Amino acid sequence: MIDVKHIAKLARLGITEEEEKKFEKDLSAILEFVAKLNEVNTEGVEPTAQVTGTTNVLREDEINQLSQSESVKEGILKNAPQKEKGYFKVKRILE
Image 1: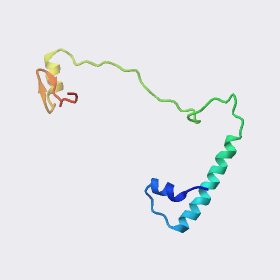
Image 2: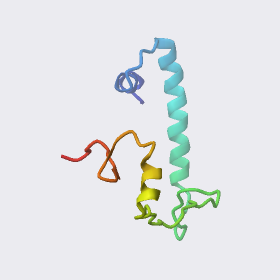
Image 3: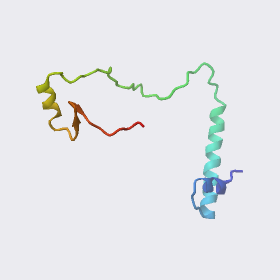
């Protein structure tokens, strides 16, 4: 028998006795279905993570460097909130 009260407590859900009876039936049905699925012969079937055939669309990393020309560098840094010695200045994230 499924201990619905225990599961509800773990999920921090308050349920009534009426809900407990309903969920007990629902969970039993789900577990019975899973048991049926376990009976299916899956030998030789590749595990699958998704079935839509979609793939990640990724681009190659490209290194883009600022031009070393002072006029170009100044134009790029013109609107930077903080800059120092010709570079963007940002908060330190590693100690």
